Each structure stands twice: as C-alpha cells, then as structure tokens.
Length: 421
Image (cartoon, rainbow, N blue to C red; front, side, top):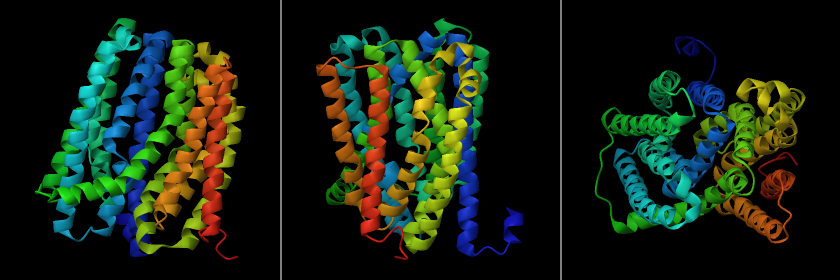
C-alpha cells in the first residue's frame, strides 16, 4: 500500500482502491477455496455424495438468510453513515448482534423440530445438524461492520487463515464417500472460528463495546431491515430453490451439476460483485451519479465478454471443476451462462444505485415481485406435471431478466442512469 500513497489518486480514490484490493482478495480466495474443495470433493466423494452435501447445505443457506435478516446487505450503510460516532456504532453493533443471536435461537429450535417431523430429511438429518455450526459462525462474523468501516483488510486476513486450514485438513482427512460427515464438521468448525475471531477483532481492535439498547431501538432496526430481509430471502431463493427442488425431483448428480454450474458463473461475477460491495459505502456518502453510471456501463461490457467465454469453453470449465464425467451437463452451463451479464447489471442497479440513493422500497419490490412470480411458476409446473431440468433453467433465467428490467425502469425514472438526458 506504500505504492498507493505515491499515486495521484484522491483520498477517496485511495480508500476505494485499498478496500477494493482487499475485498477482491477476500472474495477471490473464497471462490478459489470453494473451487479447490469442490474439485477435490466431487472426485473424492463422488457426484452422488457431493450432491447430498450440496442439497443439505442449500437448506442451511435458508437458515442463514433468515438469521442475517438482510443486515449483511444493509447494515454497512448504518456503519458508513456513523463511522465517526463511536457511541452510535456501539448501539448499532449491539442491536444487530442481539437480533441475529435471538433469531438464531428461535430459528434453530423450530428447524430441529421440522427435520425430525418431516420424512424428507430422515436420511440426511445428521449432516444438516452438523452444518448448524456453520450458521452460528455466519451469525457472529460481522462482515457488514468491517465493510461499513472500510476496514476490509481485517476480514480478508481472518478468512484467509481459516479457509487455508480448512483446505489443508480436507485434503488430509477426506479420502472417500464415507467421510461426508467429517467434511461437514470441518466446514462448520472453520466457519465458527472465522465468526468468533471476527467478533473478537471488532471488539478489541476497533474498540466496539456491547451496550444495552432499548427495545424501541431494536424494533426500529428490525423494521428498517425487514424489507431487506424479504428481498434477500426471495433473491437467494432463485439458486437455492433450483438446487433443493432438483434434489427432490431429480438425482443428486443433477444437484451437483447445478451447484458446479452456478459456482463457475459466480467466479466470473466475482470481480463485479466485489466492486459493487466496495463502492457501496462511498456512493452512499457521495451520491455520485456519474461515477456509478460509468461503472455500470463498463461492468456491462466486460460481463458480456465473460458470458461469451463461458459459453465457448463450457466443456473445459466443467472438466476442471469435476472431471470429464460432468461433460454431459455442458448444455446446462451454456444455458445458465447468460446469467453472468444479467446478474452483473442487476448488482449495480440494486445496492449501488437504488439503495445507495435512498430507494430501498423500490429495491426490495424489484426482488419480491419477480420472486413471487417465480414461485407461482414453479407451483404451476409442478401441478401440471411439467417439471423438467429445462423448465428449472428457463424459469431461473426469466426471473433474473425481470429483476433487471424492473430496476432499469426505476433507475431511469429517478434519473440514476442516463442522467445526462
């Protein structure tokens, strides 16, 4: 970072560049570690057993969405707006932590009752129970706080340390399909360590103190975050519903193929998602429409190139991820690759445009309305006995197209894009 000080960037520009660099490292390492693990696990556990893991983990992801309550999307805005007010930072941190822990206790209680009462979970109950440790780790890790404080070097170092340990232990201890539960335990423990360490660093290194907050203050934060929770719940339903339903209606090999395809697509979306999250606090403060507009146009152009590459090299990408056995799913990846430019544009039109400029209600409605239509579509396909792999793919693509279209219309209406008109 000494070299950065010698450049002609403004103070704001240097801060953005520094945080983009660290967050890029964080996201890149997260994705790279996932790919290393997926590539190893598919070959070691087999596509069938890996599909079982993915199916169980998709259920856990729903719990994480409920417990995070949208704060991982929106709480960074609270922190960015009050970054120099230590008293208010303590109140925000304490309130959000209390909400998330309370939701964890309530949600896990009802969830355990459900998985013992519903037969579909019988064969994978132990796996799901072990993965609950991963949920607690997510609850404790205050990534939203580090993002709002623009101290992204801290979570980068924490995640790197424990994910590296996870990879090493996985290669050492996971040798066959019988080690599925052992891997789930390793994953949960590593995430718990990340959460506890992040929480400790926030308190000790960034001088955060847990303080008593009034019930009205907590209820106000719940009220403000509710629409973001609903929006996040619906938006994450897009991928998770496909994986969960594939596990019920089709085979676990199909589950594995969807998961690997989504991970390949996520890799090419990574730089744009990272840039979006890093710029969010800055745009929230500066309300710089021109800068945001330029970023959207550049991201759109580059994402189209990555779509073309993914479509062209689908066979190579699948072979790298899971071996030649997955080549039968090449058409699946080709069809889903259109999501790269669609989702990239949707990122920037969402958090960095609508949320940053104060259109939170419109942001959430842009997710909720298409998601309701998506759920109704899946229900109709099921009732009419028209469920197929192709139906899941095309409905998944159409819902993202609709989200993008709604956000484009809203942003244009409020002069947040094409602002020179």
